[in-house]
Length: 431
Image (cartoon, rainbow, N blue to C red):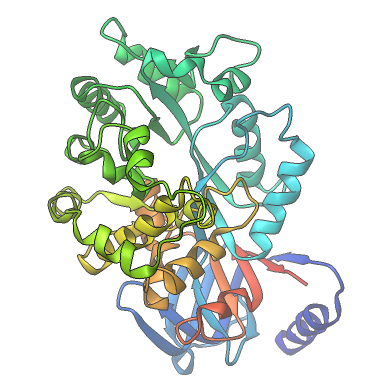
């Protein structure tokens, strides 16, 4: 019986022209090479036993005892790592433009490349809650979606993006998009944010140090995560890092520890027409900056840096903003070498996926491939607040796995060599 099942699975996996999915109560995946993000080692010839949607056991394949209630699949020479987690996406900034059918298609594509969870960093939760539920229960195929409710100072809510996100209501007065000032009822504001189904609160802009601390304190009472931009003018990065948030986004914002505005940064580093700046110039400029105290604060406070290198790649050829690219890749490299926890968040509006961010971390920021993998798994889980259930291959965690033909520790390009994806115990063939 077991051999017949295995033959059927192998035939389907090798012959099917479009993706397929399989769901069994008990599965044993044999002869896998596990990429352990906790030890940074490859553990060879292992069996992962999945019971419903959880990892029930991990053991050497030679020690596994066959039984009639578990379907066995032989997967020699395959590499398995935790399902990837993109720590920074946007699916519903403007749901009128970002249509539901397109979102479903993109979510399916993400899943079939090995992304099993994403953190959505502010959008219309009326749309996001539906998408999140549908992907959670399997009504549509896609990563789990952990989305945010946004809080910012009143000045921010003239931003056209917030008006689009709040359509049908008032920007700054929606449960998922709240203007905060000294008169705010934070107990109610946090409760309303939680009531949207959000996994966390994102702090975006124009908040004082005192307001941030009050939001974090109330959010902790109500068991909600708080995420933040790395600068929230007038509040500096050091004050945000020390406030109790679990992650900060956008590495170039660390510059606001020492500079007052984007205008000041452009004035300093904009490249005049018909001039160029070589690598040595940017090395010299970077050497004049000092971030060691910020790195120490992030480490002491266990704050994860959602670096978003993909964002800065867009500016590498812009004379006005190339400094964002040149300085960002140097800051990320330095933070990495100083032991800062760095998550992989693409923030690309799904033009690229987190795998591209991983490649940038290796090719532009000099990460070892294993550390780029950790950024897109364990550290992204930490940034999202889901490490107890996702981000590593361990007994009791969700059965979210990415199986590859080739070893991504030897070559990060192998992250694209997808053989099979497992999300909550369901097997997906991406071909």
